[in-house]
Amino acid sequence: NWLSECTQLTQQNFNGLTSLSSVGECWLQECHMLTELHFNDLPKLAEVGSLWMFKCRNLEEVHYKGLVSLVTVEHDWMYGCDSLTQVTFEGLTSLDNVGDNWLYGCTMLTDVTFNGLPNLATVGEAWLSF
Image (cartoon, rainbow, N blue to C red):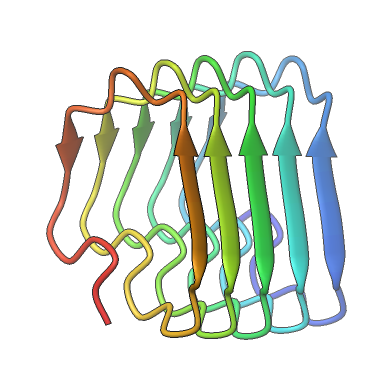
């Protein structure tokens, strides 16, 4: 439950956490004041549990860049982020598996960039569903 329900957090950069390899479930779950997130240069992050950024209602923009070791993200990744308009996935070269409900209910989403996800083989049900 790292940073779960953080009611006052509005922006966060997760840059340069070079030893971080795994995060359990509920990372940034229901952080309703968040508007922008950046995940850059987390070279050892390989796995993230379920409910990552679940129902961050005011989140508008997210950027993932250079998470080269990320292999698996469990279910409900960015589920219910209904203010989200832009998300960029760049250089997630090891990402292989994403669980159900990835970007489910993101009804304002207008700009999604997938660049450099050559190993993405499995995406669960209800991906980009409204």
